[in-house]
Image (cartoon, rainbow, N blue to C red; front, top):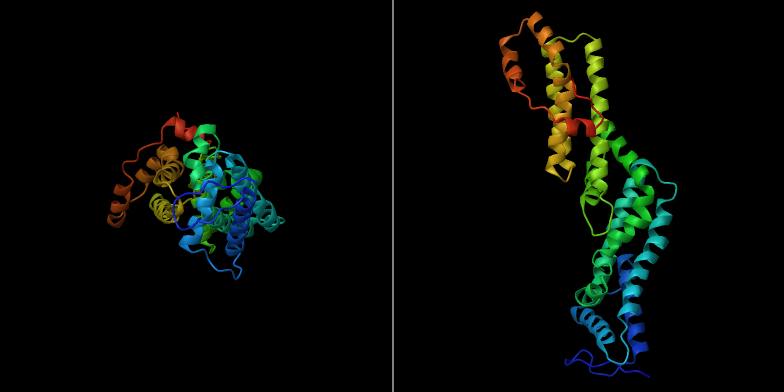
Length: 312
């Protein structure tokens, strides 16, 4: 029976076989899992966390047999098992806001378990993983969640998110914290994972262009005066700017507002200029007119990326 190489210190002062060490790690991972599930289990003390860390260290550095590969795979298996047993079943049959709620809550619970358990195997990321050029264990939770959950459900997640944005534009009350959580996940990055936010931003801008293009045509159909039309545009821009605070990247808000200005004002600048000349502009409207007197167009590449053709 192989013995673990003992390190100086009071925690592991009794020889332990490799089999006992691996079982000790399994028991600790199971306990972490139960804690993350909210069961009535005592939390780990600092000394207990260090005991398991030292156990991993000993198993991965002993000369007789190195268990780094086995422990590396063990941690990944626990991550995959959590997702398959606890996440996937919760998502079945979910749509719309209910799906977004389950995805964000599942990710939060899964990440809490993974982060807590990672403390045991952190040593592998400093020594074993770089040598083998494996996926870092600190990046593994997001990578597994993306591959097993988000990659498969991205279309539904995107549809549900865009639906909430449209509902809010139409005056309905939505859960803005839910949107913030969704964007927070999509905006985070991890090595070897899909950049969901870049994909979503492009679709979101195209949806905004289509929405406000239709709205502009509706206002034109009802023959709004130039100043009344401009008041509506100003109100929409103010509302959209406030809603855009949930986006994790400031550039998204700027892109969105520029798309709106182009669709609502600049695309039909000649038409509105003629209408403005034909109408009497009151002193009260002069400030609003000056607010939009000088607009900077998106470049043609940005317009094309959201499906808008610039006027020639």
